[in-house]
Image 1: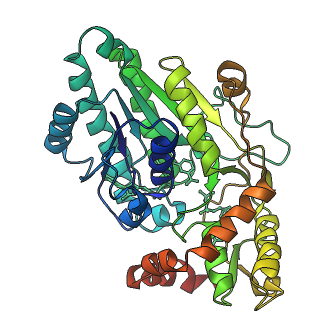
Image 2 (image 1 turned 180 degrees about the vertical axis):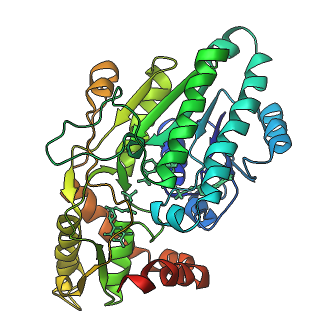
Length: 352
Ligand code: NAD
Ligand code: TYD
């Protein structure tokens, strides 16, 4: 069995579904079900005995200890986090709690559990920490992409809290020998992403003929990684990664935000012609404070050491993503309730 934290969120649930399909061994899925966690993401596993879900907060140490003891996992894959930069600007406290203190708690409980293992079980145990390229800070358009040796320079409360958690993971390997692995990936997109992040927010707004808010001039650049490629990258690191190492995972798809939004509009014009051209909804709004200019990933290490490379092209991945949202309006309805609308008021009302 493997233990996954945050497996009801966007990437975690894609990972659990992908794991059951490709590897097929049991998964213990632990998630606090914050606003970002959604058991509906796992509906297709309802009658699958290989998936065991526990609603649990990683801040609850006794509960984490008991789950480790009872289920005896061979690995922990740690996704659970507060993950949205804009929310971290409005309320950084939760980011410090879950991302820093929560990861610390998990490391402590993992260390105690691992110390009691013996033989091959001890040798083969892994703690894989899922992190972000945002810990490296911001690039100019001409800077070389982030590599695993780029110095950390986080700029938002979100990226600072993730950077802190990465440092703790590193220290637990260096000091206690805990068999850790860390991945730093770029912006994910794909099915099951909560519509607060750029791509699902724009699809959702366009389908309702609402403004498509672009922060600043729309020239900020992100590297876009299809979530299925991220899942295969994590599996490669888990099985073949060198202990204590970090691996960057990227999508080979640098785009500025305006390009991304226009690409979504073009796909919608074909698949949902009502309201075309959707580009007319594009609205430039007040910029995000401290908005990082560019993220880019140098993924040579994972490619050369572990023979992993992304399979999805941005154009095909984006088309699949838009189609998924068009085909899953019930899922979208389920996650865009009152709390979601309150968030839109908080984040967008004073940007006009
Ligand atoms: P998400 O916000 O969609 O999901 C996070 C999940 O963690 C939710 O299910 C939530 O309920 C759960 N959670 C939050 N606090 C918890 C707690 N205290 N205890 C237990 N569960 C808790 O996030 P995501 O986009 O799926 O990101 C997953 C991981 O990948 C995060 O660690 C994030 O930093 C990292 N990451 C994400 C991206 C991206 O583009 N989305 C890019 C790079 C790295
Ligand atoms: P986001 O999806 O929040 O991811 P991150 O901030 O972690 O990169 O944002 C992606 C980019 O899109 C980022 O440059 C901010 C921008 N953005 C907008 O222009 N408008 C929006 O409404 C949102 C949510 C993001």
